[in-house]
Image (cartoon, rainbow, N blue to C red; front, side, top):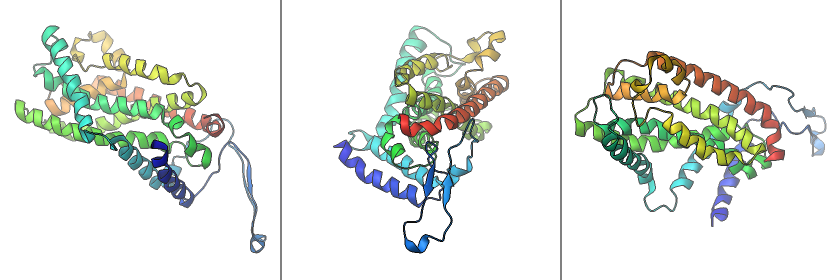
Length: 314
């Protein structure tokens, strides 16, 4: 059933790729395009050679293949909600039920402080950017292996695949954000004047997920047991992020080290911009932004270096 429904998408995506302008060929091979017709014999031959060493990022190719990014993003959204009984309600149930569990065990039984806010909205506000990050990390890490047939069929910038998986997760975030607005109205909490910074925090979360996802997706092509590490990594990262507890519990000397977790600055900034908790997390956010930049740039360069082997190894 799934294989049959995937064929039209494969043909559509292949057509979109072939119609896109091509600047590079498959880095795995050296190809020579020779004229097939007699009238083309006077035209020059195009010789394409593989890149060597640390390849340049060449991010301009992403703009040329923007239509492919759109097709892959829309495909992921349709496949996720196709033939589901609840449809988009799953985007609400996951963070909402997690909030209920945290409220019972951490808020009521353990008595963990919540910066003077009702614990349910304290936890739910942090779970929204976390769910976006966790979904983007999981899907981007497995994206290359999941799109094996597309990768081995025709060349396009492989970076398109993990980016499209992250963009598809934004729809879940927007759906769940509606519930947060309702909770703020219920508890009588108005957003602060810093609400305009929310897109910056979302961009920071997406950048962190993309950076780690690029590392894991490239490694997953070489070593398939990486997929078994991803759930453990996500679970460990959840409790290393101030979601069920405030970052104020972290001792002062350790806060700079704690900021090396990119999601620490995102979650605290999200709460500060929406709920007005404490002072602006400038120090923590600066360290988290720097860590995100390092992870993202290193992931991009490693992904581009390994890209030439994807078609033969995946």
